[in-house]
Image 1 (cartoon, rainbow, N blue to C red):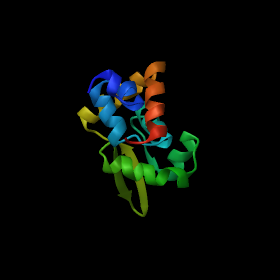
Image 2: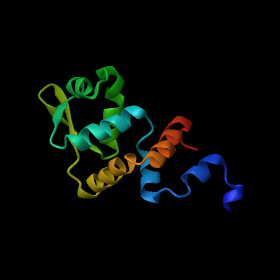
Image 3: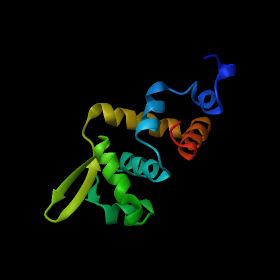
Length: 125
């Protein structure tokens, strides 16, 4: 389909890196997840509970529990049990860490942020 035939979402995403677009479509479907990705990217050696991560990220633990679990299921985070506590840490997978780095660095660009925000607000087409 040519650019004139694309809907607004298609035009907005047409020039986005395909890997980052796929990451947005499959993994980052909320601003909470975006915040959590940035938090773990900036604190790559953190291993902590949802309650403490929420405090550091400026959110409530109720607001992030589901998103932490989903990020763990998608391979962005690792979820482990320490006694009766569930703790989360950034994945050790090199390819995922590189993708996170690309996403966070791309997020510094205003145009990319506008596209990503639009995608999150609109949801997966």
